Length: 271
Image 1 (tube, rainbow, N blue to C red):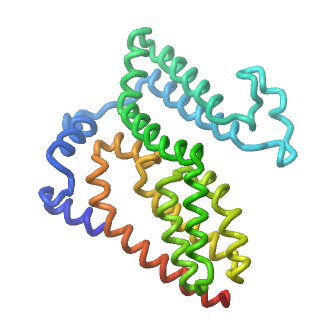
Image 2: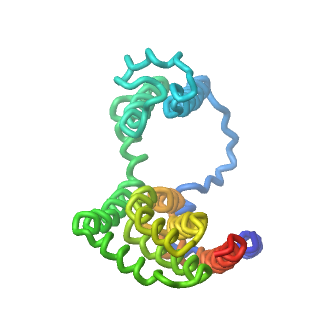
C-alpha cells in the first residue's frame, strides 16, 4: 500500500521499466472516454461465461463423498460424470464454451481461431518456462538425486536441539522446494525421512509440517515453475526480474517471521 500510494502521487516512482509501462498501457489503457453499453449478444456471452464457471465448480466437487448422487448419470457429456472432472475434462469444457460463445457473438471461424490464438499467446512463454524448470525435478527423481540430498540433510539434523532442528528444517525445505517444485511430490519423498527423524529426536511432528509448509510456501511466491506466478506476470506485462526486485523485502520479512514462529513453537511444544 505504501508503494501504491507513492506511485499514485508520482508515476516516476514506479518500479516498472519503460518497456513494461508501455506494454501495460497498450494492453490495458483505454482513454477514449467512450461509455460503452452491453449489447444483447454480449450479455448472453457473459451469461454463458458465468455458466461455464458454475459447471466447472460443480464438476470438481466430489459429490459422491457427500452422499449426493444426482450427478451420477452425467457422464454422457465427456465420459466423466460431474464431480469427477479434472484438467483434461475442464480443458475440453472451456474449449467447447469458447466456441459456443464465439458462435453466439456471430464470430466467423477465422475470428474465433484468431481470438483463441491471441488469448493463448501470452501463456506460451509461461508454459515453456514452467516445463523447462520442471525438468530439474524430473532429472532428480529419475537419478535418485532427490533421495541423496534428503539423506544428507537428515544426517545434518541428527542430534541438534529442537529450536535449531525447526529452523534448519525450514532452510532445507526452502532449498528442496526449488529442486522439487511439486508440493505434493516434495511431501511424498521427504516426510518418510523427516518424520521418523523428528520422532527419534523427540521433535513434535507439528514442527516438521510447519517447516515444510513455510518453506514450500515462500518458494511458491517466486518460483518460475509456478503457473500462477509466471502466468500472472505474463498477463500483467511484468518481467520476472521486476517481480523479484519488488517482492524481496516481503520475502525477508516472511523469512524472519517464520524463523521466530518456528522457534517459539519449538519452545511451546517442549522440544
